[in-house]
Image 1 (cartoon, protein in one colour):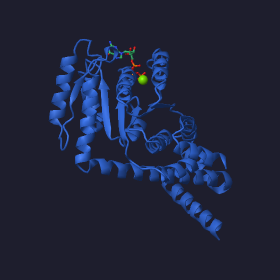
Image 2 (spheres, rainbow, N blue to C red):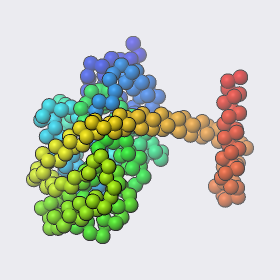
Image 3 (spheres, protein in one colour):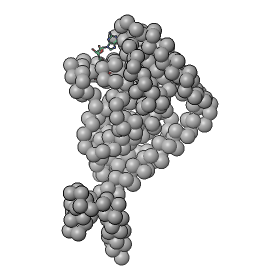
Image 4 (cartoon, rainbow, N blue to C red):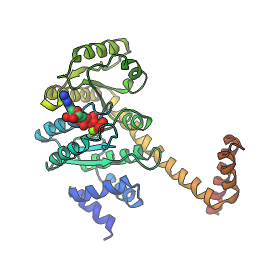
Length: 324
Ligand SMILES: Nc1nc2c(ncn2[C@@H]2O[C@H](COP(=O)(O)OP(=O)(O)OP(=O)(O)O)[C@@H](O)[C@H]2O)c(=O)[nH]1
Ligand SMILES: [Mg+2]
């Protein structure tokens, strides 16, 4: 048997080492990873896992919260897949060691699997490998996939808009920041948490958020605002309950199914995009004319519209040639 077949067989038997290997391949976007995942996911039920995104500003206490929340779930017998996107935030460098110890502690549980992803490499690469890793966890049979991201940019948004439930973690003293939140990531949150509620101003922040949610148009689900003290394990039970309640609300409507359709479609689009990008990159290397055109656009001596049209034409020509 080939190495890939061997990995797939072991995955089907629930071998955590094989899972670790698959996740590594998916992170590196290798062909072996895609072939293995394709074979594995074909043989498994799909879309059963509840995908929970936890996001918020640097240092809000996301990792601490994820750690305790996941420990609670693991003790209830749930199987968990945790994805930490960019755990080495430059803002709270000191927390990395704590993060690692906490994660090691958590990873000792037989039903908890952790994958850390560093935000490097291609634009959109993280979003697409995260989507594949979610699928891998789902096929492996985990009950809940938790994704921790620092909520600042487009990449996080791309990752989180395919999560079923998005939890936005903040700290007391939101005040003026509320306006900026409103415009961005705020809109995709299903649950709001004021963590570090042991610090002053927690109740005001809760009120501010509640007011903001009240002002927003809410359809099926009105997002609750919760207070937690992650370091003292306070408010965790309520948080877990609300996450579960959101899942039930989604399943009672067509949102649960709709989210899965969007997620599947997005994976397809991401794959097409990356194949296409590879095709174009190959062409630029091979075709002196195209390379020259790209250089002109770079220098500002050529408009990108006509250049893109020409490159598209060249790609089509090349594909036809290969067929003929
Ligand atoms: N006082 C107080 N401190 C907390 C609480 N929760 C977390 N912290 C502390 O806040 C710091 C940051 O916590 P992390 O869990 O690393 O925060 P994070 O949001 O994951 O940070 P990044 O991943 O770097 O963005 C750590 O020193 C925690 O111990 C809390 O409820 N109260
Ligand atoms: Mg963190």
